[in-house]
Structure formats: structure tokens, C-alpha cells
Image 1 (cartoon, one colour):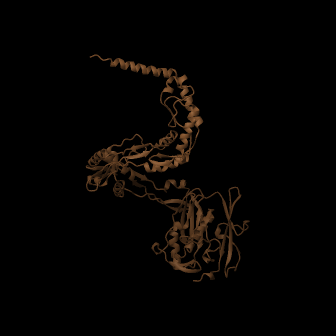
Image 2 (cartoon, helix red, strand yellow):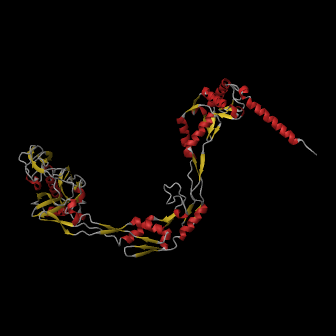
Image 3 (cartoon, rainbow, N blue to C red):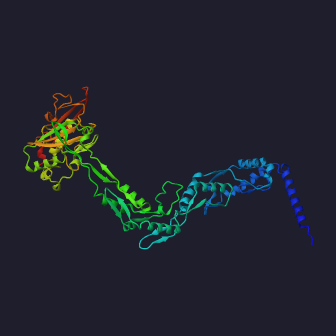
Length: 564
């Protein structure tokens, strides 16, 4: 039986196409100054509307929308909190212009969507997004591996991340189209290691610690046993050890396991102690006023621990062989660098007389002075007497002797050490070194004449501090001759002339400071035998110009105020 269905279908299609073509061709007439048949602005249907009528519809719809509520990211929000206002004229004019330009591209007979031109409360949108970002962001969790006793693999877990820029744009677009529901842009973040991959990690890791590693040392070969390697094995799938800052890095099984650096360090350190040797500085002395080497230096060596650890780590997945690196350590002071260090001449000497001291006091002076023999002061170093002196008690070899404390004189370990600090102070004065901290004794002590040139110390404070501004090293040598203690500073003299006097005019100036005559005043003001002593240090440059006129004032109380 014959049917005419195909013919009828073609006829109907042709008729529809004809009507559509007529509509397209007649666009300028049908839609003159009106919107097309499928046009929406801000989600509002404005088909066939004039711009004026469209504005009225939009204003009414927006008035309701702006005081209503919208679902943003699953949470109810008040629309008006995020929109400041709308420009309906600009919105409508822009939409109409776009459609007019598209007459012969079917703009009036095809779907057209235009957003409202809104002004937004940007800060409110940011305040909305920030907590949403924190709440939505979930860090992916890699499959974890537990090696305690039995191997257990805990499955991975996906994470997610809220895209801030895209989510903000979703909000802007949603509000501009007066949507009732606006979603954030959230993407899934997958973990770096799955449970299936973790199985391979464990298998490869255990296989690579089943054989020993050979460690080549300083003429010695060591074997790291498989039992040690298994004990050191660490698997950390969350942080591939070679993935840092390599965006395209795709981790493999070997990137998830390694040897515990702390355990490897302890192993290497134990071996290294049999190889390490400390460099010993040359011992220096003075012959005919010149610094000379009395005992040559000893070169040291040390095993590079970090290099050894990296070698052993690499050997696990490499050729099972690692090498120790031995670093030669040269002594800081040796025969070839005395001139470079500036240890070429006697810079200054300071001395004090401890005649009449008790046996314990003399013992403490000798013990304290020995702490400074051979001490080096680096260029520009702020030298602290107390720091160089160290602990003062019975354990460091000191005996009880009188010291001035608060309002009395009492026996303590180390009594008499101010003889040592006062002598060091005088050597620093005679060298022209800047004095950073110095304190006079509470009352005048006969051991420290001339008065005004003493320096009291007590741990931890007060201290004696001065700066090495010679530009070269200073080496301290101490010596005792008869009842006199000497501090000798060896190094390089500053190109200056130094004198001392009891007045700022340098009248009666002398050198060294041990010969100075201080100016005494306020005698008896603070009790019997109390007074104030003043001295000046005058420093002249190579041209004879006065560059420093340092004043040192010492206010001494009466000894009667400090009974013992």
C-alpha cells in the first residue's frame, strides 16, 4: 500500500522554513525598536517589548529580587547585601544595540540572554567567599602505609578546592541574571598516591633493602647490613622526596621511600669518629719582641656527614655502593699566616703590682691570668673579659679570697681576679683600643695604684669590654715576674700616638698609663679615704691631630663603708 507521508512531511518542513525565512527577512519591520521573540534580560522575558516597556519590567523584577533572598553556595543570603544598584537604561540600550547589529544573523528570532548592569558590594562578596573557601577546601589524603609489625595500607581520600576567581564570577553572573540559586566553582583534588600504587611502593621499598650496601671510607671498607637498612626504612607517601617545586613531576614508587636521615647520621657519625681529627693551632711565643711559632700546627680532617647520608640514600636504589668524603681542615693559625693575621709585633703591655697579697689571692691571680694566655681577639671583636674568663668556682681551680660585694667585703672563690682585669684594662688603654665597659672599684685598693686605672669585674656583671679596632688579630700573652702581673698584646699597632694625663689639656702627659698622675677631688666627701680620680687618654693621628680625648672617672667610697 502506497503512502504519501514523506511528501507531507517535506511539505510541512518547507512551510515552516518558509515562515521562518519570512520572519527573518521581515525582522526590520516586525521588530522595529523592539526586542526579539526569545530575548531575556536579567532572566526576565522582554520578547517583543520596546526599550521603555522592557525597563519597566526589569525595574519591577529587580525591586522584588533585591529585597529577596538567594541561595549562594547552598546558604541563604539577602540579595541586597551584595548588590548596590542597577543601571537599567545602560542595560537595555546595550542589549538593543547588540540585537540591532545582529539583524541578518537571526538575532531577533534566536535566543538572546543579557545580564543586568549592576554595581556590587565587593567587600561583602569577599567576606562571603573567604569562610566558604576555608569550609569547602579539603586536603586530599594519600594512601598511608603502616609498617609496624605488619604492613597495612589505608586507602586514599579525595580532596576539593574552591576556585576563588571562578566562584566570584559565578556570584556576579548569577546576580546579574537574577538567579535564585548560585553555585561556587569547586574542583576535586585527587591524592598523589592511591592504595593500589602504595602496594607497589611497599614491594619495591622492601626489595631494595634486602641487600647490603658497601661504604668506602678512608682506606677502609664498611658493610651496611640489610638488617640495618630495614631498620632505617621510612615510607612517606604524602611527600614525594623529589617533587619539591617541580610542577610536572609525576612521582614513582622510589620517590616515596627513603632511609631515616637521623638513623643514618648516627651510623655515619659513629664511623666518622674513628677518622675525624681536630685541627690544632700552632702555639705561639715571643722571641726578641717578635711573635714566633713555638709548636707547629696540626692539620685536621673530618667526614662530611651530609654527603655520606646522600650517598647511602642513593645507593639504596643505585649500585649499592657509597663513598665517604674526607675534608681536610687546616688550622686557623699556622706559621704561614702570622703576617696575614697581623701578629707581627708587640702592640702594648699593661702591668699591676700584687705585692702583699695573701697566698689564696696570689693563687687566684695565677689561675685567672692563665685563662688569657694565648687568647686571640678577632678584628672588630667586642672582647668580653668575663666571657673569656669563664666559670669561677672550686671546680675551675679557684680558692676563697676577699671580694667587694654590695656593702661589705667577704671571702668568695676567685677573690683577686680584679688584679687580672685591671691589668688587661691597662694593656687595652695603652694599645689605644676603645673601652666599651669599665667599672671602678667601690673603694680605693692599694694594689691598683695609680688610682683611676683599675677595672672591677664580677660574674656575670660588671664586665670589662673593649673593641679590637686595629684591623688585625690580637694575641694575648700573660706573664708573672716577681710580684708583677703583665698582659702583653701582640698584633699590629695602630698608627697613632697615645698619652695620659689628669687633665683634658694633656698637661704633664705621660706614657704608659701606669705612669699617669690622676686628678683627685671630692676627698673625704664620702667618708675617710674617699675621693674621685680622673684621667684622660689623648690619642693623636699620624699628622699629630688630636682625635680622641677619653675621660675616665672613678668615684671611690670610703673603705669604712665596706667592713669585713
